[in-house]
Amino acid sequence: MDSIHEFQQALAGLSDRALAALMCASAERLLPVYDAAGSGDPDVLREAVTKAWLWVDGGALPDVEDCYGTLDEYAEAHYSDGDEILGGICASVLAALDAVRRHASAEACRDAVARGLLGAAEVARHVDAALEDAGDEPVAEVEDDSWRAAALALVHATSAEPWGQRLAALRGAPPWVQTYLGGCMEA
Image (cartoon, rainbow, N blue to C red; front, top):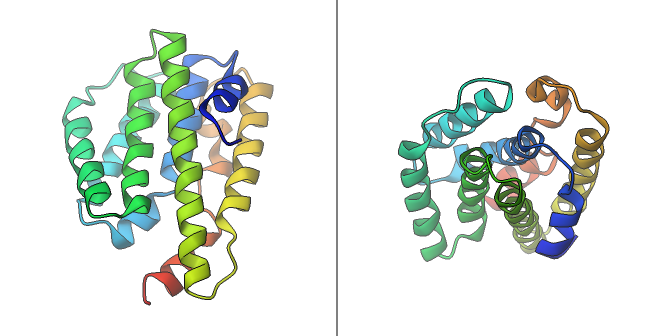
């Protein structure tokens, strides 16, 4: 999928919590890169994702405004520094928060998740460029496409909550993280 329209179509018919769960899982899997290389406090990103997961799994709507403002600043700072990977990770977490904040409007929630998934795909493309520059195999984009296909299939096939448990197998760091952190970050 290469366009916002394709992502929106793939997300059609999903509940607000399913959409937010998908975005939470997508954002969460990128956090190890931010833990290792981000200039902001990685706990802010983790707290934001945790708050979103709490709502996704049936909890009360959390107050995410404190995290949102800080994450927006982090994303802007990384993008200003030309770091598309770290900026994109912050934007992915912001998209998870947007999905929760906009849950009352199916279209707005779907749009937030579509933008977030498109942003995560862009992070994978930038990681692949960095991997190639370091002489490693570019595997992030292929892996991201595969992960997204599996995640979309799972949320479309499942209507039961809690979503955190349903997506548990998809919540870990992507396989390319160690290669990226071990090769590209040291170069």
